[in-house]
Length: 315
Image 1 (cartoon, rainbow, N blue to C red):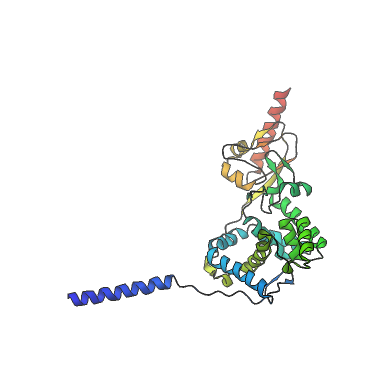
Image 2 (cartoon, rainbow, N blue to C red):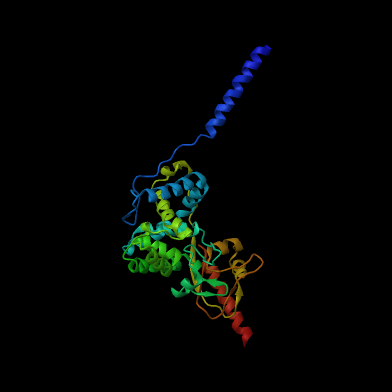
């Protein structure tokens, strides 16, 4: 190859690489839907301030948080269908299931700086008010079914308290009903969309609506169907028991031949403060644990043996 042909080839190679590089940085403009609804209520996108606020959050989620969108979708199959069925059975809007996505990113052991815990992020006082037991090493805010039942109770109560408006009910779930009432009074606002909430609540309600929109139609956010893979369901049973003596959480795993990691993630209601600590299960209290399917018989035999020996040693 002559020097002239070589340089010509090199020139075209550089141009081709530049074009490919430019295409890799090309951005597809995504459009906010013209209509948004949630739980049968319409978002007033005809208000330019409301629409611009939604467009800001939509653009941020679509371009800056694609990884989070994919993780939501991957985790959703473990929780969303179950909650939707519970809501449907109670004649409540199934869209309410998406609140827990905004609350915890569907991470069952999510713990906030304000000590909100679990998939529905109950703060300690609200959890206690709704009967979610919290004692040392035991926190029912982390139990999916118990927390879901209490979250639905709370949201239904807030819906009635705020003139059957789900937008206000969601806002109250986030910032507290007392704070919301005070804000609405000060601002002379009759609806969520007429108000200017605190920074967190200002994002919270629109984000839930956009999460619902994402699950309804991921392509709106530029997510292709082939990218949407779900994590497998956890296969477990729940066992109920009492102990004659306290026992460390990790010992249960040894009894039935499963790892601490498996036991830990199947039981987010067992609250473990640090990896250098372990929870202690208390004696003489009704307890429950989630264990892998097929381990029930081994577990029951181990508990019976432990309690038999505990009684014998206490005589």
